[in-house]
Amino acid sequence: MSKPSALRRFFGGLWNFVTRVRQALANIVFLLMLVVLYLVFSGGGPEPLPAKAALLLNPTGVVVEERSPVDPLVALAGQANPSSHEVLLRDVLDAIRYAAEDPRINALVLELDGLMSVGMSKTLEIREALQAFRSSGKPIIARGDYYTQDQYLLASQADTLILHPFGAVALEGFGSYRNYFRDALDKLSVNVHVFKAGEHKSVAEPYLRNDMSPGEREITARWLTDLWQRYTDEVEQRRGLEPGAVNSYVNGYAAALRAQGGDTAKAARAAGLVDELMPHSQSNDYLADLVGARDAEHRYEAITFEHYVRRQRPLSLSEPHTDRVAVVTAEGNILPGEQPPGSIGGDSLAWLIRDAAARDGVKALVLRVNSGGGSVFASEVIRQAVLEVQAGGLPVVVSMGSVAASGGYYIAASADRIFATPATITGSIGVFAAIPTFEDLMGRLGVSTDGVGTTDLAGSLRVDRPLNEQVASALTSSVEFTYRNFLELVAEGRGMTVEQVDAVAQGRVWSAADAREQGLVDELGSLREAVAAAAELAGLDAPEVEYINQPLSPRELLLQQLSERASPMGLEALVPRTASLERLLAPLQEAADLIVSLRDPAHLYMRCLACPGPL
Figure 1 (cartoon, rainbow, N blue to C red):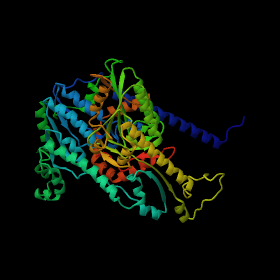
Figure 2 (cartoon, helix red, strand yellow):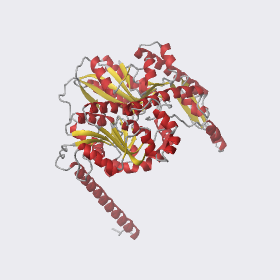
Figure 3 (cartoon, rainbow, N blue to C red):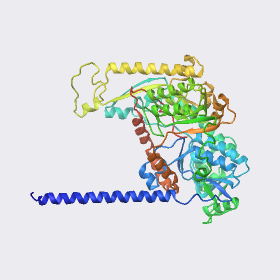
Figure 4 (cartoon, rainbow, N blue to C red):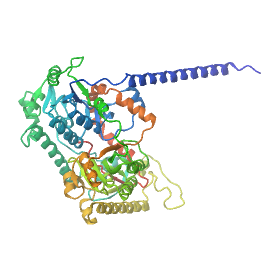
């Protein structure tokens, strides 16, 4: 047998070396994972709670109804971008309610500097829990360095509001601004073909105009004004201010700041927005005296709400067959097929609804909807699941979150009762299809498209060719058919005529109060009130509530545990550095998210593009 050549021996040795290095690195990573797991789960049982402490409500990141999948690298590193760190609304509410009845908790402290977004709708639900806490006789204190508008609405629920002497309260009001692309598309030689049903379906405007149309401006101003009025009323009532005081502060901010020599903290105190100006050490001493205890580092004794709720929440229902109301969450864009939590998959949510209804003891279903819509096909798959549950004898009640519009309203329309929070945006009953074509741009670049097909429609959906007239006609017919179907199912579900629905539809966006007046929703109320209504429809007196979530694989469960147990404190330092950049890039991110979400097999969508993010 001949001896291998020197070159072959060299590459063979090199390959063996690479293999050994790869195996060694894999073993190191495996050992590191074992160390992480040991550090996370070891400890010999939880430490006892202190005899006297404050509940520290310090959410970091974004408050959501349902968590998105955890990135493995983020879970192992234990640190994430603040805007991607998610806090469950249910955790916040349960922690407050448990603490109200816990004799060890004698105060509640709001520290909101790490809060990136919560929105008015969720804040009003948190307010309900805070009111129950306050009725137990325990004080609520808020302290912060700088209150954003989103943070301040929640902070205003405190009995005493503390601001750092170099801090500020940044209020600006609500606005709805979009980019308009008509001139840009003309310059780029891009043609966007939009087919819509609904006079006010503003999806077409960014592609056809350079500004907001007068009709859309009037509609948007109406629901924005309604939301801002609720915001200012809430702050003024909690702070004991005269009506109009918040608007006076915002509109006269420059003059108010000059009157205080440019001191933003004193301007906020002079306007009655805060009670005390204290540096960290002074506010810590104030809270320590209030709580009556300090920890080992001489800070006021407190237990964070996420740790507290994990300790206090029961592991399971008291009895597996206890009569109960099941709550299923539908949050995010509506997409076809199976989708992870944080998005609404037509198949995955329909399966979850049927699974919840089939569980022993479930006598009613509450569907919590927080969505601006999406795929027509996926929305219909979900609606059929709702109808099947109702046909089986279970009442279905919808609880709307911040937004339940277009496809979000479509999946809610057939429910037995519909609840919306006072800050919900809903309606937008309309349908659209959009197809861009780039034949003019390709022509400018000197690129031509030609060929042959076996039918008139062959190659008709290529974006480098003009839109086929038959395709355009077919899309127009499909959009009109889907819109008529939308009107009919809303009319059937709401006990209205098609003409009555059409008068309030046409793609128009409604505030919750206007939607109730128009018959699109039944009541203004929280998720708790929707659960109570579902129990009443099912004839239940004091039912248990079961939250039904998508089942997680062992890998997903492990990553979630790692993410939840990793301390979020390091994120707070990142918030000031990332918040401004993220606000700057928000329009680009929204556009990218929209493109990714357009996956309907028939290219038909019920999506409210004019609806805002959290306000």
